[in-house]
Length: 234
Image (cartoon, rainbow, N blue to C red):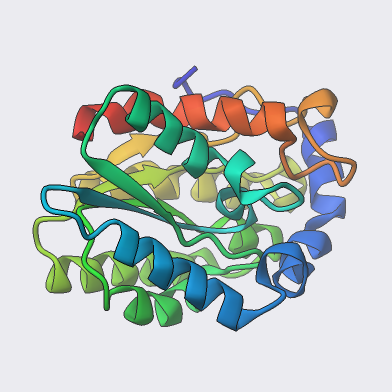
């Protein structure tokens, strides 16, 4: 599951054709109201302030937010269920935002740092790639997000969710994008999920009609992909 597998160019070409959907999702289901998002995160933070309870911040895109689904069906919530079943002292805060780029994430992380957390699951970069943004900028943004977290909370543990791009973006671009994640993980001593969409990308029945956002069953696989690496940090 955790080996690097490259999804077919045909599938990824289809995904690329709906890239505009990813970039426009910020104005739809999971981000209709900035106040709602703020209230949700602040409420979650208050609920996780119990003695001895640690927080896991999931910081990412529509994949993390669970676009098109109820938030309880997104993989962070499924991981919370796993944690609860094992009676572990951790609470999940889902800070996923549809349409998020690495640059937008760099700006948003300052607000999220107002609440302490113990583990960060970083899932950003996919929207950069689908828009064909310069990867040099994406790398800098992801590193600066990491640096900001380390500066504020030096003891935070990181899990990085890797992604891949279609060959239609160009072989060099796709390869550079793919290698960006293990390089960042190695530099910052992060645990790496090589490809978040392993087992889901390119499988029609596991994706919604847009062909890019996982269904309920697809989110379950994402949860397993992340849990396989996250459990070692708990």
